[in-house]
Amino acid sequence: MAGADAAVLAEVVRSQVETHARFGGVVPELAGRRHIESIDEVVREALARAGVGVRDLGAVAVTGGPGLIGALLVGVSYGKALAYSLGIPLIPVNHLEGHLSAAWLGAARLAPPFVALVASGGHTNLYHVKERGEPALLGRTLDDAAGEAFDKAAKMLGLGYPGGPVIDRLAREGDPDKAPFPRPYPTCEDLNFSFSGIKTALLYHLRDREAAGRSWHVPDVAAGFQQAIVEVLVAKTLAAAGRAGVRDVVVTGGVAANSQLRALFEARGKDAGITVHIPPLRYCTDNGAMIAAAGARLLQDGRAATLAFEPRADWAIGD
Amino acid sequence: MTAIPAGPTIMAPPVAVWETTSAEATRAIGQLLGEACAGGETIALIGPLGAGKTCLVRGLAAGLGAPAEAVTSPTFVLIHEYAGRVPLYHVDLYRLDARDAVNGLGLEEYVDSAGVTVIEWADRAPAVLPGDHLRVAIEHLGGDRRRVTLHPQGARPAALAAQVAARHPGTGGA
Image 1: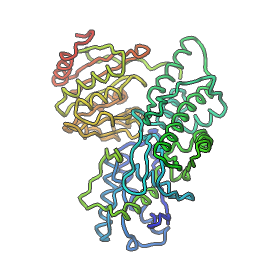
Image 2 (image 1 turned 90 degrees about the vertical axis):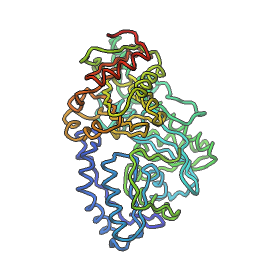
Image 3 (image 1 turned 120 degrees about the horizontal axis):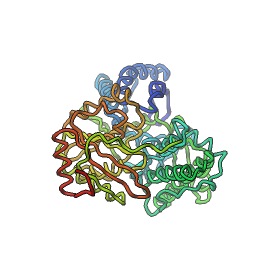
């Protein structure tokens, strides 16, 4: 929950990591069931930690999509019931707009305008966040998300799930020049991404070596693969900032944890005279505070919904 | 990784076989398939990583009047929904094993709906497939070459496959 100035009063994250670890991800029906079991407890705990009562709430912000419809329905139904019973506004928040709002959480408190890269297992989107109105989508992945590319590469290399952290760690010990990969869809004329081809390139790289009876040094392959992805993410994001005429860039989503991505953003951003902001990692990965922060801003813009609102699994913004 | 995943197990005689040499050609087959769908179909999409499964689904979306350019990999969230002439449900079982998919996914609600349900990596959980379904297999032939085959199970999928094959004669099959 967050105040109107986006101060976070309390945070409670009920991770389904344990439930889902066995599956290597989120299982929809299971997610819906766990949501039902957890939501009331999580809200009560957040209120208790914030030291406020339910009647102190001024509005309820809830994720309205995109996502798994079973899980969205639980949150939206709960949000509606809470808003109706208290006579306060209901603010449906787009999950991606929530990610963008991580910019004004934590120390930086960055105000728009800025360009933001949201890179996770499910998304790779570039937005222009303006002072007012809906963010504009500048580019997005045409196929696989960046985090997904890391996961699939890790699987091919027999490194387990999730792939991002282990590739990041191994890449530090490897030499990217010993296993160079073509930069996927590198043209900055087009701000869209494509990470499906590099997956196939890795597959062929390993297969050709295997066919030739040659082994491979996993850290070198990890370093080469990671560098190709990271360079394209950084180049297109900074190009987007240049095109939008902004001096600030926000990098969020789980891939923002990647150490090479952070280092390269800092270095190239400095060269380009652009300040790169990375919110604290707990606000980069999925969390409720970012939804509350987005909701506070939407409330100021008068963007409450009626109780007829229905969650949308395919809700896109800025197209 | 010690071995490249094996090709698909052929479960029904193919009604149509194509060899494609580009992503566009694979997508075009998907589009014909989408145009031929009336709603209620289940399509099992089988093929290794990088075969072009999502690419074929992009064509399928275009054929269903859904926003084809919005189609991305559903691996992470497992299910994407797109609004078209009839809804398109794009499912990906890559991260699941058979038991999870059968017990936890609630896939029957999608399969029994009036939409078109396309399931990537359906071979990981054959039990989720209804009796009538169309199996679409994509194989790597090296470089950009792929082999796409249609294996219908049941009368309606057989008619669907025949309709597609009639509009785009393949390079082999029955």
